[in-house]
Length: 437
Image (cartoon, rainbow, N blue to C red; front, side, top):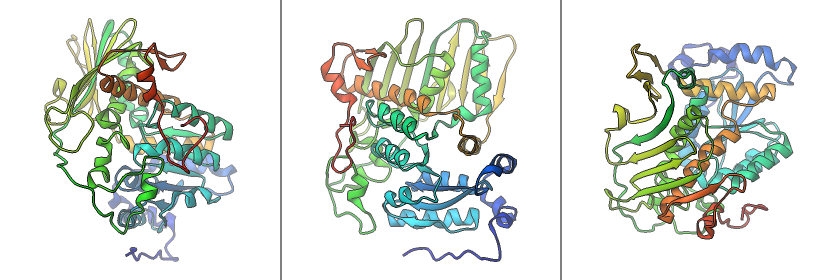
């Protein structure tokens, strides 16, 4: 049943955001107030009207973060699961004092001319198709990562954004973090000496998802719309909420989950783009369940003058350098390790460090500013595509079982037609776009 929440017409949004209820929500938005007042004077409305598509986990957090901003009204939430939608609507209303509209079909959000921008926080297989449709509908886009499910989708998103003049920010929160920026500045300053090796990793003791047979889909779920462009398959709980990310049809494994974040940081510090060679080794060594993606993986990304190594373990909490998810830069004069909690330098005469900050709030604030100013976000679509493609290249190398050589200009593997077939996806009608199939 829908949540019965009614906004009090005598208690407006600005009053609500100034009250103790906002403080109890625990989401800081102070930096956006002056932004809205200074930038939005030329707009017909002093608020950005947003819709959020996919609100089970990250989408729900983003809805609340944007709702906490006086510069934003979250007016619509969308999810194919009515149960998820009901919870997210109530929580968002608790933050902004206004109940968002509920939609089961994202096309209603895109068709609403009063909505300026959309957040896309769906499973990976929907990201590119939905982003292209959002640009065509004249919406600016906050697109969760990985921004693509196949490498070839990137050019379609870029073309749609350019053709329709859209701002796209990707979910690489570290790009708007002061402590990540200061860490990268330190790496590039030369104080570590020459950096020839960087590592990025995650080590989390995840639970087994077990083995499940296909079952009847819950009545509250529009499963056909959830499948969208993916191949038609029977409903199975191990290919649905959360567990979809361990299935190749819908997700990109741990590389597309944590890898996209930490590999982006490593590339950022090394000042490199896509690699020349990729080799990956791993497998399903620990779990005996329905997951298809590897629970243990090591990927080597080789460049002309340096090496970048990714590692993940889904069965251990003991990470490299004592950090569960981080990036490290190894120079001949010192080592810098950075994660979401801060950064620290080792093997240097003077110890250097910095503490972490609220990543999500600063990232949301940057998107609001860039939409209002029509400027380029720190985590723009080009940055998001590079990080996402790194993950796809690693996954393709793992599935190929051999080292692959990448031609950045041609955007293809060199002399490997079998690996090149994995650069494109397949799309179920009617979710087919020219160039995506």
